[in-house]
Length: 459
Image (cartoon, rainbow, N blue to C red):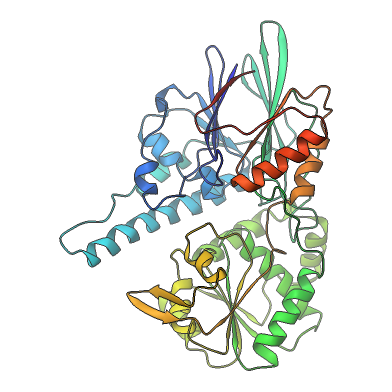
């Protein structure tokens, strides 16, 4: 069989790997590559004929893993898309939201340059619904036969509700080889989610590397960090705390942690607005699949309601404006996490020049994004054709990052014996992270490769 790394090679986004047997082609993930400003055009073409793909296996719903599935369908893919039930439902939300993003970019360019339309959307709602019809959900730990030569098992990996590592057993020429794809590895002790489970022994491992060479903060807990930040931003001084957060995953973990803080009386009441219809819809899916959550979360929700009195979900534009004009100290949680669109830009526009505002980043911001520019300390930000001085306080914590750190990644790899694991392929990381993880893996006597985009390997 042949493995080709088609995405997230020496970068973080655009996850896509192709596993080819003599008469059967498996695509693992089909994510949007949005490393460049021209990403819509970059994602329009595949380095293979989509009609030749027999099945897609999806590790989880995040758009850098699922976001180009409708394009694949539009270009001729006719097969099934296999994933867990929560992944299927969360993916539908995210793909429909991508359509809104595409249309927004097109309309924004049209308004700015009246005679010229913006980029054509990669896909529309019709293609999303055609894609959703292809989803076939399977359970964790249940061996699923894809083909007379191939079986699939999904292993819980943390990171996001329903996220799975993929283990494929392929029989060719009388021998069976196993290959695992980690998808995105979660971290231990993350709010709401279970810890990543061990992978069975395999011959080949394709591992993500986002936090290679980096360790998560251990000098404080998430609860204490939030208490300290809220105290400084909203209680000690009558200001507001704005938290950019991805609508699916990060927002639910944050709301759960705030629920625990306020239900225990660790802070006086502070109004909290979650300004994201997508987050509201995703929260309903989290509630539907509550049995997928960790035991601590299940026990907490047995004795406490998911919604608490300080928390309000903002549904429409009118309510969003009302939240922006709320004059008492408050917390506003809004998407998108990297500030590249979404209602968060409304709140930034009105608060970047507010000395009594704190903006707390709780996740990764890709290079060149608005979030990255604020974190790098740029004193002036251009937003809505205006140059805004940054007077707000900018803070960051990695305590809500859904990615496992260097040690978590090494733990996944160490579950395999160096004597039997033939090769580790490192993907989904920036160069520095990939190299740091590669060096550590080599030191423990594993064979390791950092593939280039489009590079193929005979297994």
